[in-house]
Image (cartoon, rainbow, N blue to C red; front, top):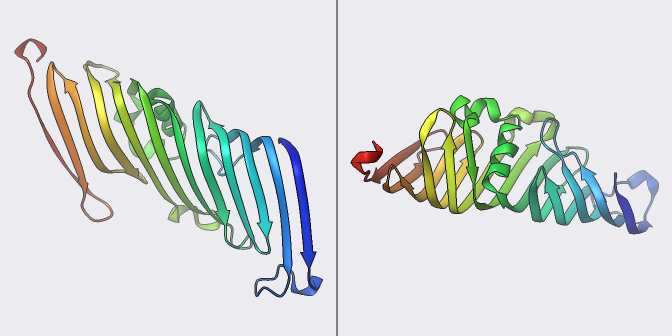
Length: 220
């Protein structure tokens, strides 16, 4: 989907050497698109309203998007690369901003939602966030995918359904790698007092959490 605003094609070399993996020639197709839809993975929310420059050079593909939406999140800068289209190993890096609830909706609608667990599904929140997303997606071996989402919060609030103790004035950063909360440096107000949460990675499959704070007796 979308509209091709401009396009150009360059081809030099013998057809029998295509796609010129050893630089025997050059195949170069470029296009500027607007309003495009990019379904980068099944079961993930697609990128819509994409404005991007798309380039196919010999065996590879490169996309640089300057605007897009994923759900209600706004992508401000993103790249998608496949070094060799025969291997279909897709790498996506993107910067996004929006509201915390929009970020939670993106994750709970994704294939990793079940692994994040039922408590995560009960979370809701408000407040501005900025996120950096890094998806390493070997299309033919999706079990080997690597996902990293780094999120920064500014004066956000978080609630959990069934728990009458929302977290307020949340500031700091949190990193999720695959289904692991791998790192965090967070400060907030909870139960009437300040709280600090530090999470540090321990190897590739575990993290340690340290939480300190105070609470007012009336809130406990």
